[in-house]
Image (cartoon, rainbow, N blue to C red):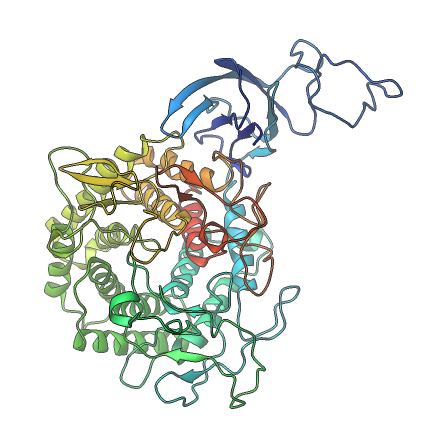
Length: 603
């Protein structure tokens, strides 16, 4: 493996933290201090190799461009220069430098004797590119219609109920990941992201050539599908084409469907396929009718919120269905796990914001208090993270890592409707503790300032995988533990971007500007400032790994699930053409979180 010089391939805001990292790969003998030079992109600095016969200074030889050493005194002087210094980290030796002081807008590269960085920009609102790319991804993920350049009309015959095979028209919506499955647990949150973009972008979309009503049109597109997925009793169905338990397995919905607060963990690929688009022909995909409290309350949350943005009669329909789903959820209690508690609280908060008088305000406040009681307050080590009910374990989630904190932040944001300012103030403090005493307290443990995946009260297989000390006998990892009962080793881009969203949003709402930098550092990791110099966005940056997309080999804009951890908790990303989903699959959740983080970093 060669030397890599990594930074954010997209670039930086003028005021952004800007860190440069040299990863030595297999190279040895590098000096402790390596000078670097920042220059206009595409205009290389001169080297002492001399010109080759048959070429000139005007048209130099286009071969072997790294021959020789840099001669900084010759030619155009660099715009900025500094030194990369060797550091020892738990991920090995690296060379790092901070060039945050350079804030002049422009397009640049950084050069050393051994390697040159990818081009990058410094400009205001540089992260708008993430938002634009997300909107392109969402369009490409549409199901039930043709998407020009991506796929023909698909799955017009969705679907049949898994109970008795009776047809239910469920065409539309979005494919969730690098496949054709339509999980409501994940795709419902596109509505939330689109509404955040509507609220935050104002007229900038139209000035940038995007039709002002296009975001709400996309909301309406998704809602055609979502509104078909709620039955007359108010239950929201879980998915279309999620799959069945693999043949000859002993997996059950009760015991194996969930892993690390992630649903769908035993669904096979039996319905992840093209169909003939002809209803009642016999190849329709199945609709899962199992009750999932997360899906139920996420539906309430996003439909209540949509009712405040859409025009009649869509707005009234959204609120009506949100109320209907909430009534079903209140009649069918969940098992009180932290993820469900947070989802129910968020759903009721959005109903309250939409003016629904049926919300039981004392019960809502009691739920917030219960969620805050599940926040660890320990005298040593990490603190402020959330736990499961009865402090049975730390709360960890692949897809919804920041949801408890985001819910309490929303509670504080809507404090004027609550008539209980002490509890709202407590919610604000809970968010503060989660960020300061957990996320930021642990991100210093690695050279890229990554936030933690989660805390373990009883670390599994400690003889086979590393857990760092979290205090009071508990362990913590930056990446998911690879040795686990399900054998699922899932990339954690979604964890990082959900934390970036929380940090950026909380920075703005709680007036804590020092949290913006850590949010940006998490985006930078995904944009190429990582140990492999790989962008995890298929449409942004350079040197992307090959994405896992089961039926459509390459999506024009997508984000990958990202790095996993080896047993020693060091990062791993598959770089070969031996494609595997664990690190390479395209997925909705990290992208919709990154887009919302970008929104809150615009001001």
